[in-house]
Length: 267
Image 1 (cartoon, helix red, strand yellow):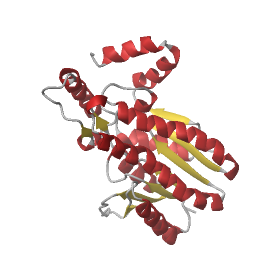
Image 2: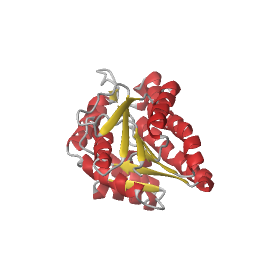
Image 3: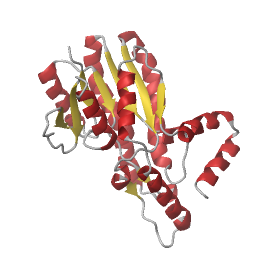
Image 4: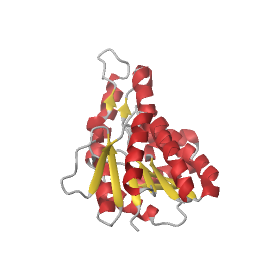
């Protein structure tokens, strides 16, 4: 029997790559976005879902259950970026990103858990970020949302163990996607004390995305996780130095690691 997969944020980038990779391998894939466009090839079923709206989540899940009567995998991929000096980032934008990157995935999880519990099986993969392992300058809010989702996943795994429901995270580094175009950028203000450093850091971040890895690599890793009987707590996908930076953070004194980041961002 083909397994049923729900992927949030599947209209572009990593989510789209995962959706098509799985569909080509026989999975029944439901991709979602706030305003989905139907796939011409019919390989991926695109349905509307806004992770910040409980009613939208419920409706999407009911659509899948009506069609398939089960949900085997959920990949919480929907998210948005945000950059800016912490002092100057508007509160409403901070809250909006937390609603999308943190509270949204939690609402999706709450909606699917009763289904998976009744099945006595299921797997939830939360897409976090290597940025979620550290506080990065001018990306502090984004790092916080992804870090919070990773920590919550650790707790959820233990609470769900008795129900045979598995949960894990996969943290990408820089991938060649359109995330930079969809980010909220706090404006570079002429009278801002952060103008020079923020402007330079923003340019560096965009260059990293443009030179990022192929999204197919993420798709392959996610597929491998799905086929694992005992998935690890966390997976990281990125260039060697991006993954090694997490190891360094554990090993080095905090101020030494901070100095490495300052040098990297030329601050």
